[in-house]
Image (tube, rainbow, N blue to C red; front, side, top):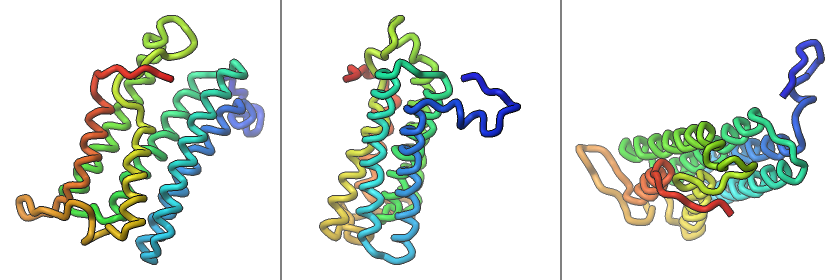
Length: 207
């Protein structure tokens, strides 16, 4: 991307169409965060639904930005990094905050959710530095190492189902246990599993 510092808003002027879809992805992630903050203030479950729906919308924009970039044959290193940063917000931080808002608020829960986000960051960083090698000289990556971070949508769907059944806070599925005097909700271990798969070396074909 060629940035002319003498042009006002030069960076924005040089964005490709796909980059705007990537920014829409990030905006959906922020909408999810704001919705969960509102839920914590009001306890109105509709804000959980809105947060989960925002993550789903982020997945749609994430799929579209890649397709548009290939269709228009316009991509850049900045666009790839922009995509990763948006994914961290929408598929890393947002699902963790949704889980926290739904009741995974014990000390052990917070540790697991933090590790989950850290795994997502690490997964995307690894992808960015290995994307060229994984594409095997072509324009498209042939496979992923570790599960892609948008698969956290499955966790968000799980939380949406829990909310729809009233399984929040003290009523969370699988209850809670005390470890070393601090609370752990076993359901948070799904986030630990997801994070572990993201940083694994298992190869998944890219569709």
